[in-house]
Image (cartoon, rainbow, N blue to C red; front, side, top):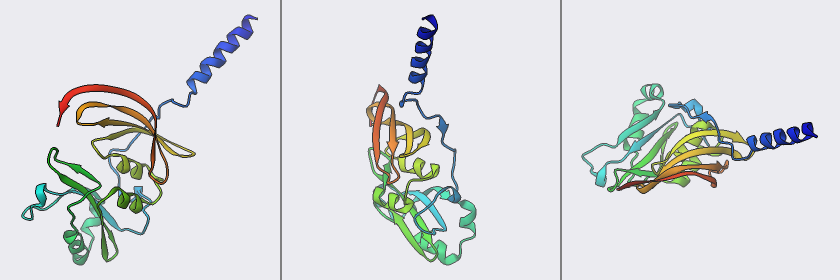
Length: 197
């Protein structure tokens, strides 16, 4: 009888350990290269930019991330000119709060450029969300930081830190599907910050 009781307790503990809310443990990489993406077309280069405040024409938009800097140095003069002329006042994300600086992408497909200026554009550019790099850049918006992830049959489970910039921040466990849609699994933490931008 003692063995049966002990076995039952151990089995219950093991079931608790395998609970579906166990948190993902795989950390995201510090940086990504073009080869880390499976893009929707044969893009040869892309970069993420921050537009300037109030679309001031005398200030160039800042390149935040290049995929890859080595590829950029090998681009032709015409391809660089295509990138230089690609611009927008919209973005799939924003910074400079309480003002507005759009965060947008520019991609090069042989001899044409493509501006990524909305979340729809970003998801279309990525195609299915099927790499760590795409997952990270899909979620690293609105002052959120993807922390850890694990791949599952439905896409990815991700722990993401968020900040509403007006008194609250926390972490959530979410499910991200291949089409880029997301579902909250569990609110993990919430705390008051006392700061509102």
